[in-house]
Length: 231
Image (cartoon, rainbow, N blue to C red; front, side, top):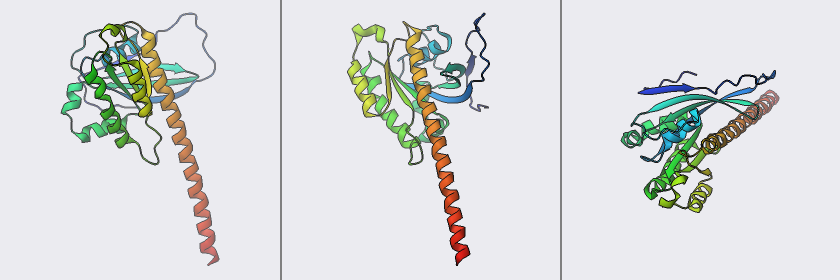
């Protein structure tokens, strides 16, 4: 897949090779997943993304747009992620047409807020509503969206409870995780692993739906020809 997006920085990360590991003789199912990561300023969305990609924590980031490529094996599937990290300042300056193009490109979304910042939490619901309005239709499965409360390690500065995050995600039919990108890799892995599962389910449902619709069209065409021949 060729990604034709003007970027100031892009990077590619692949899993470390593990010497001595057995090589599977079966070929894993391959799937691509286009993911957009959104969030207010200073919520740690870039830190979360890079933690997932490299297992390392980097606390400071410039205001840069980035697309990363990363491969991950999940339950017999090889998922090739294309992760588009959007600066909040750029998102604010874009018109709805540019936002809609990005949404149509994406298979799934990660929406990050800081548990220490009520305003960042309040900005999540409008983003989810905009995504669903642009992406969902009668022929489209529910959009895979994960809501992430970051900076769990700073619980003594908490302004948003875990229950509020869970209730918001439940009301918007999204997955929810509360993590600390600063403390551990596992939380970031869970976020993208969970999103990948949702994307796989959505693509499989869409494929099945397309197959059923094609069968219905074929059967309808046959009966239409029979009615024409009998006239």
